[in-house]
Image (tube, rainbow, N blue to C red):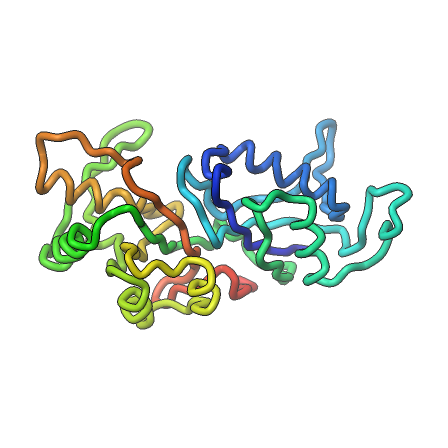
Length: 264
């Protein structure tokens, strides 16, 4: 059985690296009695994969973890009154969160078809909100984006420096949630109610951009490009503001939230 878990990571957990986050979920599932499938061999491990690891210092209200399950039974808890009992999706969300801290919380569990691709292989876009920047600067950044047909940016890769055009990778850039909601409506199928409940910042800079193995735009790229445009002689401080990932998407012409289960 395949499932997709949507979760929140915030607070001081934003400074936990990807491998530590993976270990956290492994222990969390064992504590809660989640019947996760294991690989075969001398060193069996839980079968799970993340859609896209977050960088240090970035929070999220909608990240995704794909997990293989044996069943929805509570298992591995000898002497526990719930051992062997089958729980509903809603009950499992409550149970897992009861064993977690208040900075990593599961907000959704979605049952996938057996033929479903992993969220990592499907991922093509993501949305972010950046706070900690004054309104005038945010609006200047939006104008900078709108008034240039090309915004070339030198992206450092493991082997070299690659020049990319941010205008091709950033699908929408808006100040405030309402403007972003309107701009992203034409090409995205989103869980708007979830976003409003968890990530609505009227004074935030919202970015909808390509993400994944082919093209991976990071939200601070547009800020660094704007900084280099107005202050080329000063260093860019990417830790001077707060970044939150608000959702992740798949698709090409229509970008659909990972919370809308796909059997592709």
